[in-house]
Image (cartoon, helix red, strand yellow):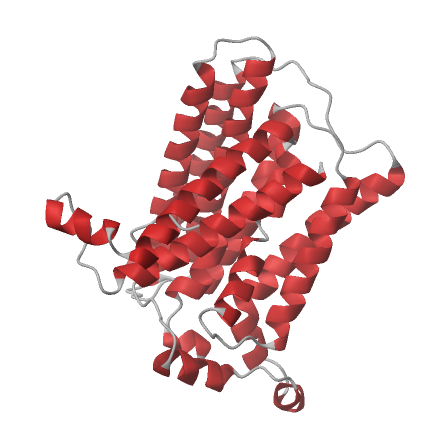
Length: 343
């Protein structure tokens, strides 16, 4: 179990740090196209190339972890990618972190230990190949409901001639992207379970292809939410929905169960809870600091203003909300948040 958790942490570190390096490399590169000169420029850009290789290596490690451990363990642990990215950004990109950031990192780390201590190997349960269309049907129903809700609010906003996004729209786009990210992990795991049950080997690449499609579609919805909405709301909803979807779908579709021992069960549940709280704190730390009472804000070495000035002078900032690489939901707060959010 611990081997799978370490693989997951290494995978999510590779994914998140790799995407940051890719974005840093693209700042001096032309828009990506199929022209030979452009592809050559990307290939010979050391920062982008290292980030790309780290991203691919992280994806392979994640598949390896999913083949060894329950998705209800892997998916929550993968949420710690934001904590790893925050530490990397602090030491490599010289970004100033506030006290709430460190609290979030600590809670995510403790939660990971709890998941590792409480998680246990699952006995292989027999699942049917018809679980794939059943999952697709459930996701389709959820999206019909969420998009119906979205249409109602858009119509009301149009009738009232409101130009600004409402929080409901940000929440819906965040939930939709998070559901798809969570389902991507579950479907990948289903491919390995089918292989263990003796199904044809072709089901593994088929499930992985469906998983990649889910991730790409999730990124599409996430980008739509980030285009006009607030990164804090969209990223938080996406991160939490991804963890919850992975856990619930793993238990319902793959037959994964909570540990029988009371101590292990409490440890696992507490680990899930702490990881979610840690991710939420990391995504919304800047806004939380601004809403603290002035005496506490003065005492906490948040460095909000210094963070903004430091990023303008010495660190690389990403201002666009349409990254060229598929970025995990939680990391987008650091990559696409506007200067006003950090000021």
